[in-house]
Length: 98
Image 1: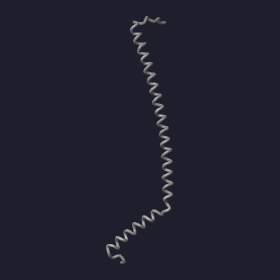
Image 2 (image 1 turned 90 degrees about the horizontal axis):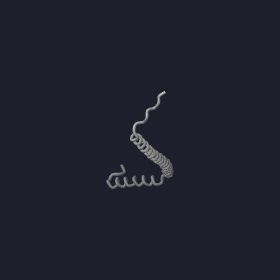
Image 3 (image 1 turned 180 degrees about the horizontal axis):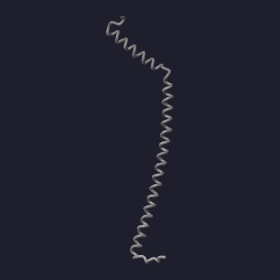
Image 4 (image 1 turned 45 degrees about the horizontal axis):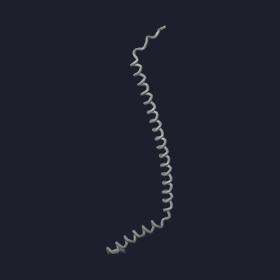
């Protein structure tokens, strides 16, 4: 066995770690990961734009429904005033039946 002292084992571990780091740094596969990151960023941007469009459409629908609710409340108030006026005017005359 060529390694017998603790210093030799420590030196072997340091050389092993240095080899891993050099191999990782010189690996040609880093372009692949950069491209994947760019593709993912592009998909994320498209997703955000789509969801913002959906949110804008939902906000427009909510605003339209709020306008409709206000219109219905106004009509209800008019109907309530008409009903109150009719009740104050007294009973209606009898209708002729055929």
